[in-house]
Length: 458
Ligand code: SAM
Image (cartoon, rainbow, N blue to C red; front, side, top):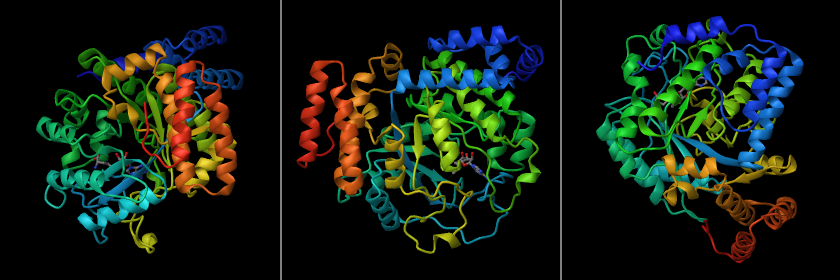
């Protein structure tokens, strides 16, 4: 298997002490987007010195700036079923938790979609618990069709990323046929013993089946896959190295690694308490995790959720996060129900700001919130996307698309205050576009959007 526990153990054992000079040399190398070797990652994981940490964050920030510019992509999760046959010790949906389970019918899904759209979302992550009887795969397929088809006041949801349990090649083919964006699956933990301990006597407990899910997805033709670790289950140093081995495996076998990596951190949930978990990740460790991933895989998106507080989100956006969720509910039907607080969410969230507030705050901090969904709609997926990203050419489309979708957001969901600050940012940035043809095209499209046209993208 491609996750070799002994190899990771040796890496961690043999790289505990590294001189300051050597760390600085590694950081300098990483600055040129060359990624990191396994040994180098292990060495960086042991940094404790304040000055070196600052340097690590600064290099992560400069990589992020160079590759992603000021863009931060926005999305929201949509939970449609909390039936679950699994026993995940950390999850509010674990089967021993007793609460009224539900799954949304077509009309209820449409209502949720309309509410998400009303907040300005164009990209969602579809989430369900695993239950072959109460939430069969055909239900998920139909839900995807419903979401894409739901007519909203200001246009439809344009990209559905899907986070469902590991499944078969055949089912992945059907997901692919439904034009999903990224197939997302968190490994939870790469540590086999801890994995088994965390998922006792349940479908999800098959470590190898879960670990090879992306192989089956790739075989089925899904070439954008999103990995992740639930930080807090096992030693984070082990997890980062394992995550990188997984990425290497995908690159070697299928020519492209993770499209995105998510960095969920364990939160309090129904039926568990955090003190049962000895590997909880501190805030300082979390920052280091984000920065090291940014150095190791410069072209892979990093996704941050509302599990993190406003302050933490603001800080790690600087160190490499490229996508954030906003206005999230982790309960089924949570966007609709005013009594959502009675619903059992999968875990608690820490950033309660509305998407409008998040957009305003990002702009105030010098970022460009982006609702762009153009890449996969234009066939820029898998290694095609990575080639463009690595050559730097992706910038020519990402930047204009971010500005155009932000303009849409301002026109359709903004208030007076955002109209002033947001439009100024947009036109300042558009005028900085280096290629004259792209600049003119962007300016023309921005004008069209202000005059009512929608969904313009490159
Ligand atoms: N059922 C799918 C599966 O098995 O992968 C989707 C999982 S769930 C809807 C999405 C993710 O939430 C999980 O993969 C897990 O990492 C995360 N999660 C579960 N409990 C959590 C908690 N207490 N704190 C933070 N994240 C949690």
